[in-house]
Image (cartoon, rainbow, N blue to C red; front, side, top):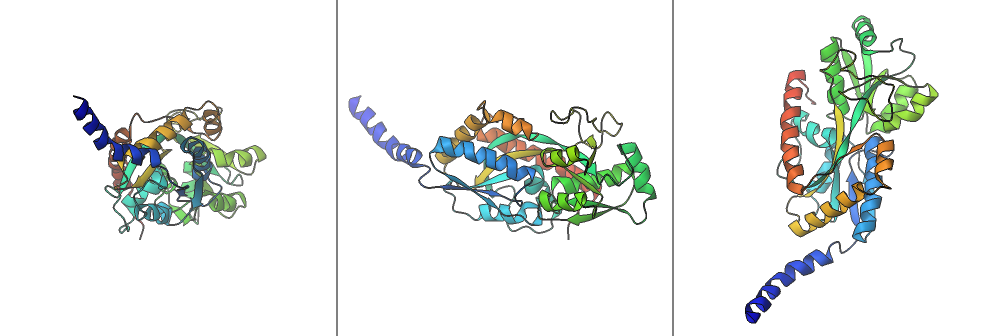
Length: 320
């Protein structure tokens, strides 16, 4: 019995050593957007908390472009050792792969799921020089607009791009999309009056809404945003088809060792459950929700791909 127990301990030693050795050096979190947007804000808050729990710095790298595809590709091709991670989102990860005809990685099998973080409802907003204050008025203005209304998206294939297409389809008017390399430059042009409309999670909008240089029309969903409690929803205004939230999650390259995935998942959940972290995410519009296991998040990704696939087909959304 003693000999058998000793043998089992010897067999377990390599796996245990690997688990204890990870992470062996600083980690890298790739955010597939430029600095200043909602993805950047959320990613940096989570990176700070996870670094403290993993005992290694987590360096944030902003790699915007192609609606998230450039950043995704970096992580897909990184060594699968758990030291390079991706902040994934509904648009940058799921929708981008559905609307681009060719992407340089496998969106289904090229990544390992770590965990879900939560979601932020998207807000539909406009340049306040546009004379509308709700979705019904937007419908009438958009149908009469000549030339068509312009829409600033943080990248082709993002959640904002898909929601913009649904706005055009649901309200029945044409939209000209202008794509940027992230939320910050897109928002800058809307506030400056160069583009008329934008959608995004609420956090980056707040200072401009308070200053009156941006006007919110609705939350695109069933429930009001906790950081904009007076803003009515698309459901309340009679447009339930406009239902979109930006979710956030963490991925690693496919083939990352399970023990590294488990350690990262535990560090992520501990960060999200930290009473000092949750209010910071809530202030940025994120309704925090953890996943019980990496497998649960993997199943969520499959469901989301099916849901957004149906929306993309309905809107005939394609990026050439």
